[in-house]
Image (cartoon, rainbow, N blue to C red; front, side, top):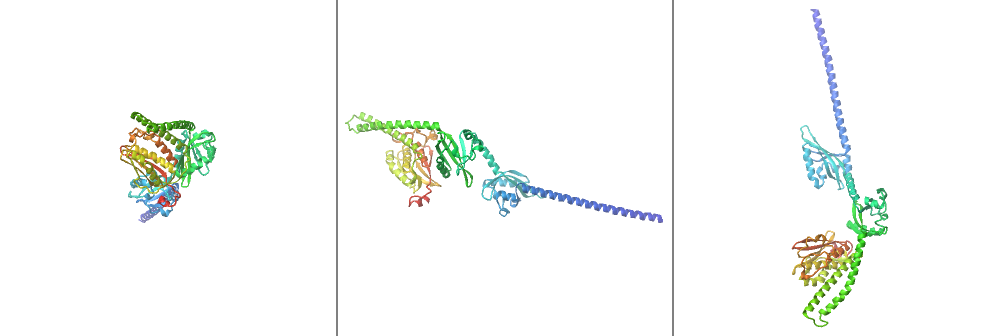
Length: 523
């Protein structure tokens, strides 16, 4: 009995020992599992922190809440777009999208609210007001209930890369041209770029051309050829000039444009096209026309004088039929002399293109004088010239004699193609930094067939004119040449059976005007 009791006691003791040992092992295992879980959690936190650090250092990062308000940005965002942190936090991200991308901003927020990633190109406003082109990836974050709580956007500024790509595209296009293209600095006239055609003409490489003076090219040999042109380019943004190079004796048409690099840096892009042969042909043609017209005018004047004597019966009475024939010959003599005069005027307009003296001119006075001078011609055709706006004093830099010639041509054309009893309106008005001179008729309009060539020489409308008055087809080509001499431009609007309005746009005079008129001109 005692032995059985001892055995039972020993077994109980052993069981307790086993339970204690197993309990200790379980506790140690639990502690180990807990330590392992803690280690895994720490490693996960480290991984998330590392990923967050990598994200925040790889691009311009912004974090927005579920409403789209900015809650965080990294330093690269601030550096890239020029903002201070306080100027961003709490503001809606859409405030930093340009007006034309507000719809895109809403589309991005709608997509990410559904838990979908958005990626593409967007613009973002910089602190200085300029716009940056960015590649933008927006990643949505959802909570445990699958509810959208925030967005993380990673942006890369690709503006410079886009500019470089565009530059490559532009230079590639220039290199395919068969005209010389030169980009230079207007401050020191050093070359920045020449296209392949220009390089081949000089036998230069791109590196050899870069930094070379413009005066060392075959296109421009004298600084004076471009100095004045550059002033005009700075004022108007573009300029067209004909340059005769002393380097090779050739003539070039130079079309120049101002290219803005930054707010305070400009370059001039000029395309040079050789026109030597066509210029020589034009000179020969003009010389021939001049000789013919001068040789014709003298005998025609004598013929007209003799016909005038006969028509006035100074040599005695004539039969009615003879007098009628003399009248026809006299009228045709007038037409021939008028044609010769217009040809000579066209030639003179081209010859004097760069030599016309410019001075302050009041267009209100020009209009009044033109109406007075041409009203007699209008009366013959039953046309009334008027200024419907009573044009106020408007000052431009021009030449009064040239303005009178321009208006005389436009007004006579308007009168010839207008119905008897109608009016031709002449007025001027200010439009922004321009003064626009109008001549409007109530005629049948300009036929569509001749509109593309309207300002070319000897172009005439095949229309009925008032009083059987004929034209030479030179008037509008002379007008265009004269307007360009005044640094202006001419265009028109026309409608069938409604009429035509010619518009001459001229730079408004910015400097001082004659005393007493400065206030009106600047009002």
